[in-house]
Amino acid sequence: MTGRKFLIGGNWKMNGSKALVDTLVTGLNNATWNTDEIEVVIAPPAPYLDLVRSKAKKEVNVSAQNIYFEKKGAYTGENSSEFLKDLGINWTIIGHSERREIFKESDEVTAKKVAFALAEGLSVIACVGEKLEEREANQTTEVPSEWTNVVVAYEPVWAIGTGKVATPQQAQDVHHEIRTWLAANVSAEVAQATRILYGGSVGAKNSGELQKEVDIDGFLIGGASLTGDFVTIINTRA
Ligand code: PEP
Image (cartoon, rainbow, N blue to C red):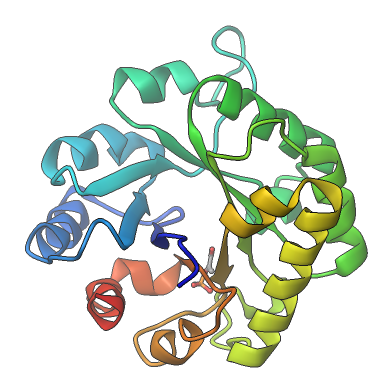
């Protein structure tokens, strides 16, 4: 036993509608899992956060997909930690590869957001990408002082939304490297306690094999989180 609670995260990206919220949240509300062993976090688009939070049962954690590193002001189009707290939402994803690639968010901006979100008392799913050099650079600048609320998501860019999932061994190897990096650069305790999620074309057909790997502490799921597969993945773990 690793002592780490398995986290199953759903990133809806820029997809949704009130009808889809109803379908997906009803599916989750009807599902059951052992909350001592499994944590479920869903990240709908910002305009639906309030609706999802108000409909979902308390065992379902709700997350933003991104926030800015200021509380308020002249930052048109951005989301604030204050809004999240006002809505009873205490998670955010930061540094998803789509933010980095499409919206050109740098490691520096990502690092500032992670630090800011943690200081605001939010839990963070911090995403890191494929290349070792990049990953090390990201984490060096992102090293937060408080690790309790950080979950790392390893998402090889080539596997996101492509249907090409990493093999369990490929994912395990990288997760192990990340844990080794944490031990060397932060501490053995943080390395042992930090959850490392795999993301990239996870679905009902491959979650069972992936979750057997000792350093895979959960998933960040895009496409399949918009379907009944998400509950199947929870049931496969439960
Ligand atoms: C993601 O966007 O975080 C992701 C892993 O997407 P998908 O599951 O669709 O590959």
